[in-house]
Length: 276
Image 1 (tube, rainbow, N blue to C red):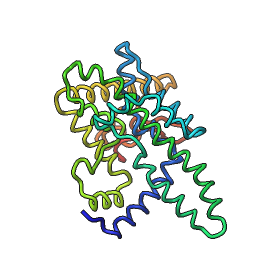
Image 2 (cartoon, rainbow, N blue to C red):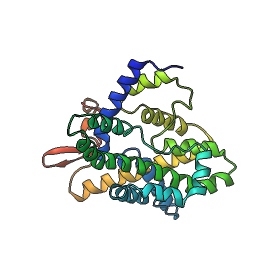
Image 3 (cartoon, rainbow, N blue to C red):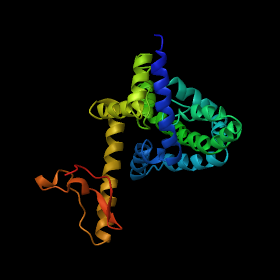
Image 4 (tube, rainbow, N blue to C red):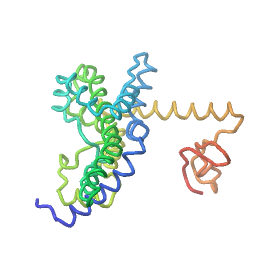
């Protein structure tokens, strides 16, 4: 399928805008990586701590200061990478920061000061964007490594392990799923992170399925939500406040948008739920 030039331009502009937001907010560990943390919590409760999230988070900040951190990790784990890639684990740049290089090239074309602007951008947004992607890559590789043995002992499909590893860190390949080039460009233009949205929906689908994939997703999400609920409830009780744990609208007797939030300086901060 031949790409439509106008769609490519629109998708590139959209990606560049997303990259400016995502690269500096260092949110990957707390959004896409949240399920990885849930897996670690689950393993800790089983008496088999893994610390995948913590290790990946530490490497993310190392990558900010030394961009070669990810290459060193790849070189050290070449056999593992080979198995993971063969199973379909996604590595490399995240869709959230894929537009960062485009902005750098655009700045480089500014007359007189372009070279300086491009280098300054590369050392700031460029480093942070790369570290964002590095966290996700390391977490996927470490998660695959940790689950590979038990997965194979159960006789489960190794390609299913690759797929669920990607989804648990907010990634999937639209191209591999047969989505055409121009549709991918439309999605990139219209949505903040279409593959993250797709992977989240697929993870929900996995949760109601059967087999090793469903078992992993169900246990991980249950642990993540259970521990999160317990931590919030205990924190509010310690502060002498009544936990707001009813996510349905206030008109139906719930806590509405105040559900699972806490008060800080007169403002409600937290997850929230229904607006009213």
